[in-house]
Structure formats: C-alpha cells, structure tokens
Length: 217
Image 1 (cartoon, rainbow, N blue to C red):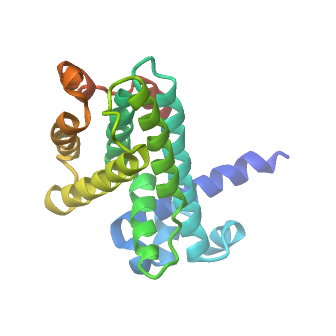
Image 2: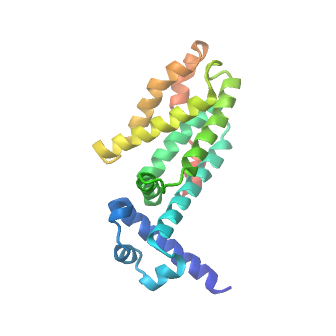
Image 3: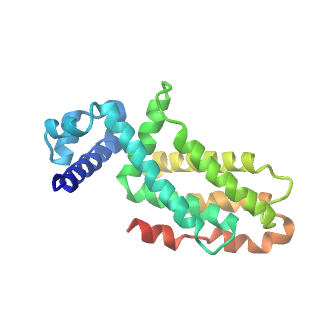
C-alpha cells in the first residue's frame, strides 16, 4: 500500500510530460523518448503504467475529459440561470485550454485520432448532452426561445466553440480566446433569447464561474 501513492504520482508525472509533448507535436509527431524526457522518467517506468503510445494518449484524453466534466459539475451548482451556466461552461473550457496542457493535448489528439476513426466521440457527446440539459432548462426559464430545439442548440454551441478555439489557435495561439468566445455569444444571444429577455444579454454574456476556477486551483 505504501507504494500506491508513489505509483500514482509517477503516473501523473508521465501523463503531464506526455501532455506537453502531445500538445507541441501532436500524436503522430510525439516520440516516446521525448515523453520520457519531458516526464523525467525511464521508458521502463512508462511501460509499467502504459502499454503503448496510443494507450497513453487515450489516458490523456480521458484525463482531459475528467477535468472538463468536473467543471460541468462545479458550474451546475452556481446560483444562476441555465443560460448563464452554458456561457460559463464555454468560458471555463476556454480557460482550461489556455492554461492546462492536458486539456490542450486531449483536444488535439482526439481530433487527430478521429481523422482515421480512432478518436473517441464520447467527450463531445457528453459536452453536447450537458449543454442540451441546460438548454431545456433555459427554455423553461424563458431565457431561450420556446421554438428552439435544445438538441440542435447544444450541438451548435459545442460546434461553434470548437471552431472559435481552433481559429484562435491558428491566428493567435489562443491569446485572444477569451475575447473570441465573448464575441461568439455577442452574436448568438440576440437570436436565441426572446425579445422580452434582451435586457439580460449583457448579464448573460458576463457570466463566469468562480466555482469551476476554484476547483481547478
């Protein structure tokens, strides 16, 4: 039992090193020697925990998803409207992408592996499902138009966010991601909120989660 915390710490160090390398070079470009160097570990230590580079990559994706779902759960406890929680989720995901190499690496290698149908769809489906559940609530709370299909809205929001963060990476190395996500909502909210709720657009746009950030510290 005394070795278990040490083994967990070793695995976490390997995952962090792998994330840094995957984030820089992608899945195909990453070499195990670079990962072990970044982690400060031997290949023997790596293979004790992971059977292959793909096994390690999938663990990074799973860890990225765990971090994201933790944010969903934290934001779900915020005492604000469902639509504000959706905005919070997008901004929190943007913060994670900018600050956490595990999140960046998980997203990058998910897209790479998806090019030949090896990438897991689960993380995106879970994000869409979480957003859809909040959208259903937002309709009932009167913040989304009653004629909107929550499933279509959720798929659009996750797709739009994915596009915004990708373009931000290409053009600005994500330095402007917070601003671009805010601009996304500036464009979207007037079209999806009923006219009698337009006075709340500024309040909804400004929604940020303190709980998710506190949980990440």
